[in-house]
Length: 133
Image (tube, rainbow, N blue to C red; front, top):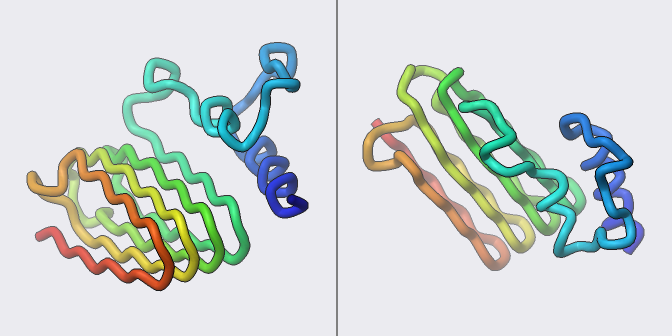
């Protein structure tokens, strides 16, 4: 429970400006926190990246171009994500969710096939290598 509270504190510390008077603090729990931290698409710029990590020793390395919209959520411990599409100017929208421990996702490149890609990993000790050229 201590890690969850610490994770929620960090989420509020590093996210975009949240106005305290607009939040009903009594209704925040593990199910509603993502709705508060990650605003709706209407509130965001056209291209953005949002990373939420709850757990210990999670890592996300994103080397992305200016036309990339990516949402990353990692729940668990020792999860690693490498997402690289900085060598292209293609518009990319992706969503990656990892639930479990010790998972590795390594994605390089973007193309028509990977447009709108959603990757959901549930379980432990999974590895995904994806190359889009």
